[in-house]
Image (cartoon, rainbow, N blue to C red; front, side, top):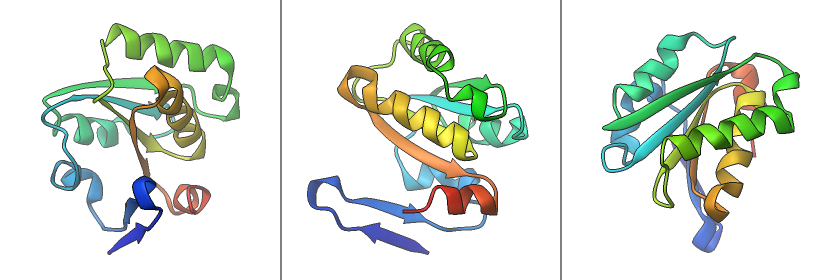
Amino acid sequence: MKLTMRLGADSYDIVIKRGALGNLGQLTDLANRKVFIVTDTGVPIQYAETVKAQCADGSIFVVPQGEASKSFKILETVLRQMLEFNMGRGDLVIAVGGGVVGDLAGFAASIYMRGIDFINCPTTTLSMIDSSI
């Protein structure tokens, strides 16, 4: 199922589909840009690895699980890793996990180079609800 949030130039899709992580490359362009995947220690690493396997140039960054990861210290670390990965304006950040990861990665994507593309991939029902519009 695909829901389109009709917001003019800021429109985006919400895809609800079993196995979406394994088909992310079919839903968006992962082959022609760098993809920085943010997850946390509470999410099985296989989820992020599933996404990375679909990328021509991907990097996984794992933060500690919990609300404490929504801090300037962790944000700075994420941004530094994005810089070291040489991300540019056409690149992509993907959050794989729950609300903390989505908030952290989304904010990092929004301020990196005045904003780059971001995809949120919540991995539990609770994180899907927490990520809702």
